[in-house]
Length: 294
Ligand code: GUN
Image 1: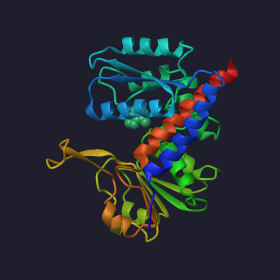
Image 2: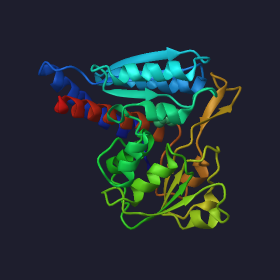
Image 3: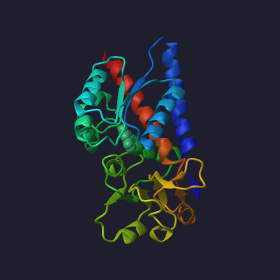
């Protein structure tokens, strides 16, 4: 059984980006620059954004963190995004989701210049993804594809079961895995809360991507021997014995499923780290496209 270790795969991606950034510096060029907007004080979002900023620094990128109050109105957030759209020093813009209730996430996503949309959430970029055109692939699905590539996991002709249909993970990974690309060419079944025969479908999966946000949902009895398991879950579960008072749990019952699988991503230390790698790759891509256009 192979542990698909996100630390190893993400380090490889980061190392190659670090070399590229050092090369840019040697040529006297500016660095890629990511602007991250964090609205409010959601604990998980704080952690994710801090990690994104830290990883930018470690890779040699510039980063700017813009913190806005929980009570900010939509117009003020949109105005901040417009300023970043018009700032030639900024290559990538990321607004951490979820946003407070008074703000329309859709309006925010559509306000970001598609050429700076390193999350790949803008409908123009989603449309390009669906049509197999060059675009920004949303960071988590991109990270999964990079993980499959790093560990040379064979996907062609395999049946992939995707549990979850979110715009951030389930929908885009189902498109990528069915695409005619090296880590694609799967037959994909997308399952969701109205799928009646989920266990039977999962048992047919050569690859299972669990992205529904329910800790321990995928159990050994749902898994075909030798399946490849990609666990996207990162739910905080209360644990008084843990230092922070909680533990991060995946959507897969790790121990029992690992005993049956041929390969599995751990949580933490799996897909989460690859999400950051995907974001960094997108930021470099945004930079290169900007520099080549001007
Ligand atoms: N919230 C959960 N995942 C993501 C992500 O990939 N990008 C942003 N911006 N917010 C998120």
